[in-house]
Image (cartoon, rainbow, N blue to C red; front, side):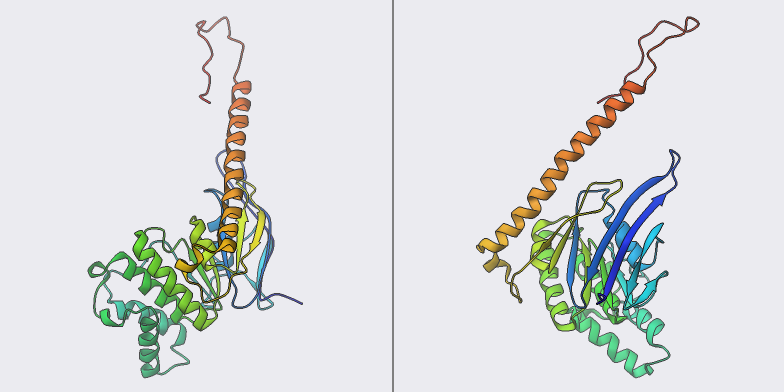
Length: 294
């Protein structure tokens, strides 16, 4: 039986000045409808590349993405993206930033009044109905992210893609946004793929945590099923041994990959040193060869 969303043997290689760079190598992942999955791993492990391929912003070199038995090969309103930076139109009000997306997606299927009500509904979901006429520079960072999420939800996407959406927020605002996201996802049952570097955030929000190996040629290293009842209370979970076990598993994985990254960098430095010329031509000044820093 096919899953709702399938990332099937996805690999991608980019041309560089130093030759081809393989970023992802055979990434496989299958999601159920309504599942909340987070991607976690060290910088450079291809998390954002996976998200961009699912969004249709990048084309895989090998493999592909299938959503509801249809291949994904371009961007579409069935996959909405929320980035770390809100990307709001600075000259538009809070209401108009969301309404713009609503008009683009539903102009042919909803009346003007229906589109107005739908815009208000999605702003109410993120508790921003009080700031409809404000411009982005008149609201806080957390409020901007709420508007960005409202805009994405207003498109009624089948899959919500979130690339570290709370990474630039202070810790208090971040906790409020996490609680709001859990509330919204419980109500709407969206399928969510979210990138995060925050271990606690991953365990709190996820049904599964996908832990990526180091790049280049990154792949899925381990998958951790999070069997915690919903709704989740962060204060109660702080003393929950199962929660702390999951947290420790993610930390262990990241620590092991950090150590591996250090070994790989040392090996790379040694290879570069060995590749430096040891012979000095009689026609050149007799100076010691330059060594690369370890």
